[in-house]
Structure formats: structure tokens, C-alpha cells
Image 1: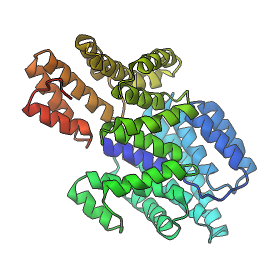
Image 2: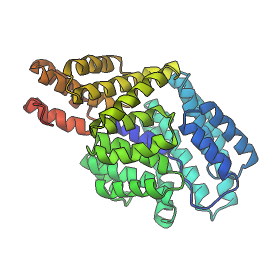
Image 3: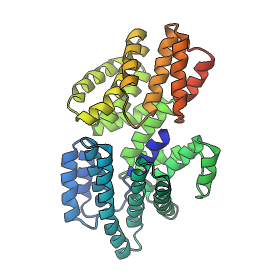
Image 4: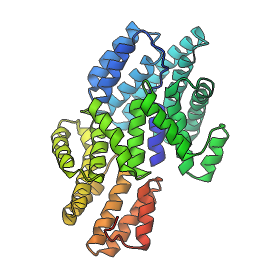
Length: 374
């Protein structure tokens, strides 16, 4: 579900004040290695940085996150949860000591709140709803308090912006719950805060640009805006497969077919270099992008064959791409005059109920067949 994705990103975002701390250079090197898919190097750098700079605000949480994502490349889902849970338990004591030692420094409290929030990612994956609610509430309360009382900490605007945006596009029940925190429930104000983090955040700009690329592609239907952010991401992290997928779709939907073809060829080469678990996750994504490319080139039969493979092999947690694949599948069937099959695909998309723009379009095409004009 889309809400699952947002919760994961909220918990995972690196938050750091604009102050400079001893060890920033080393930690940033680890972060960049992490986002560039060099997980082994990232963990090694961050493990050493924890020993060399134990009072750095972010190193402990970023280390735990890096170890978690590295584990996802090779271990089972439950094994990754066990590792993250153990690491979070270890750093919980570290942040408690740092907060006690530096009570007037809000950044340590921010990272303590973020580490509590990341606990919710584990319980959410295990479907332990009450524990998820408890961890999420405790972590978010700390972050929200820092954001309100220290607006100069730009990076803290990211999680607040995510909550406000998501509430703005969600149900009235969630809007009411978010208002209890004293926050807005406006998608526009939420986007403004995420954009602020993307343009001015010291550390959060990476996650902010990733979120904006995702939102502008699959919720707001603004691929030109997505292109600006996804292009920036692949410039800094050329080996990040997911960022390249975002960039590829941005190029396809802005009709840059020459660059799109080149990216597809490059990603085909990179796919085989991923771990077996990463291939299971990412190959259906790439199949969908290829299908979208051929669909926009008006090669409908090629597009349908590829999107069928994407749907059949889909195994990732992030179902927003699956929803877009069902939508594309339905549009292919409509173009081929197979209305019954098209409606089945649109209904599969709607059933995901993930708040993406694909849901709205599928509902529209259930009433009136896609005619190739959009």
C-alpha cells in the first residue's frame, strides 16, 4: 500500500541540523556510499565512524538503517527485521545517554525520535498494529515538537511535510487524527515543506527528492516536476537502481525517447549485477517501465507482453508501481478492443486502494474505455 511506503520513508529519513559536527565528513561518505548501492562500504565506514565519533548525532541511526538495507539484499524479510530490531535496541541506549548529556541540543532528541519511529517499521512489517501505533506516536511527537520550536532545522520539515501531504490526500478520519497533532492537512502545504527539504536540507534532500519524484509521477501526475528531481538524484547516485527507475519513467512520460532507450539499455546491464533478492524486487519494475516505453511509442502488443510479465512476477512491497502496471495493462487491452480484459485490469488497480493517480484513472476508464487521447 502507498501508506506503507510513506511510513517506511518517514522513519528512514536522515535528519540533521545545519550545525557542523565532528565526523560529518565520514558520515556523509557513508551515506553517499549507501545511496549509491555500495552497502558493504557504507556499513564499514559508518561502523568505524561510530567508534571514532560516538557523539555524532546521526551516525548511530544511519548505521542501523544501512545495516538493515544491506540485509534486505540477501536475507529473508524476518531476518532483516530481527537485525534492525537488535540494532535499534543497541542505539536506543546511546541516544538516551546523549540526550541526557546534552539536554539543550534538539538534534539529539530528533535522532532519538527518529530511532523510535524506525522501530515502528519493524512492528508494521510484522502487523503488530498496537505496537506500531505506540512507536509511531512516540517518535513523531518528538519530531513534531522539534519542528515547531526549531524551524531553523530545515531537515525536520521533511517528516512533517510527509504527514501533512499524506493526510491531505487521505480519508477524513486520518485528517482528523493529524489535526490532533496541531498540523495542517493540506497537500499543498505538505508539498511545500518536502520541497523545502529537497532544496535546502543538509541531509534530508536525498529522501525529499526521492519522495517528490515518486509523488509527482504517481500521485500528482506531474512528470516534468519529477524529472527535475530524479535527474538530480541519478547525477549524484548513478548506481542507485531505484533512482534510475524514477528518472527513466520521468523521461518516458516527458517523451524523451532517445534518452529513455539509453537508460533502459544501461539498466538491463545493471540488473544482472544486483543480488538475487534485489532482482526479484526490481525486475518487474523495469519490465513495467519498458512496457510504458513501448506503449508511448504506440507499440501496443510489445507493451502488453511486457506489462503482463511485470504483473505476473511482481513481488515488491511497494504496490504503487503494481497499480500503474494494472492501469497500463487495462489501457493496452482497451487499445486492442478487449474491453472485458481491460475492465478486469482496472478493477485490480482499484482494489489496491493506494491513493495513487492510477486509481482515479482506472475508475474513469471503467466507465469509459481508454481511447488513446491521454
